[in-house]
Image (cartoon, rainbow, N blue to C red):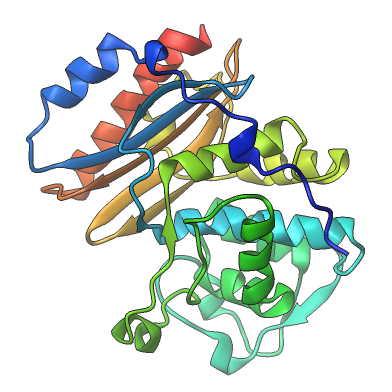
Length: 275
């Protein structure tokens, strides 16, 4: 039985007065063709800055955050165990990020190992194995129950047939920020599973986006994502005052440009609200 919580959108209010001039000035200086969706929350759930926050964008690998949350929820419900093992089959191999595609068929991995690989190196094989185990429909049911109306997992990773059929995974910066706030405040998962999910998000190895200009002594629990047409990241900056930041960039000239934008917006959030 899934635990139902008060939808998180009812717990978070958008504070227009909290919009900061530094964010506006930065975004105004960008090429007007670039589309940036950004949401910054403080630890109380108040929106400190938002721009295009309700814009529904292709999620890329940031969709792995709700996969991790649903997995952790099923651990809470004792439907899954972290030490449970899953066997890799030849047909499970897909390309893109991660090294499981090079492992021998028949090798077994624990659920925990797969979850860490999914976040740390964005392993697509690990992600698909977890989606098969917990059920795509359960990920979406969880999103619906938690009040996330726009975020949906509609296909597995590297499923080009599904892409050709028009199936895409979607997210908004506002909703993914709410998910992370829910983890931080233990409103989605039980205490131990919240801690576990955050520990796994702290293992993300991508330092080109949100962590880009954050001091290395400041932990960042996050998950980034990359497609040819969108670069995104969502995470919690564990500064003196925790700051939740999510940024998605579209219509960029290069991945490096998009990463720079994400990193610099995260730095503004850190300098303004984290210190």
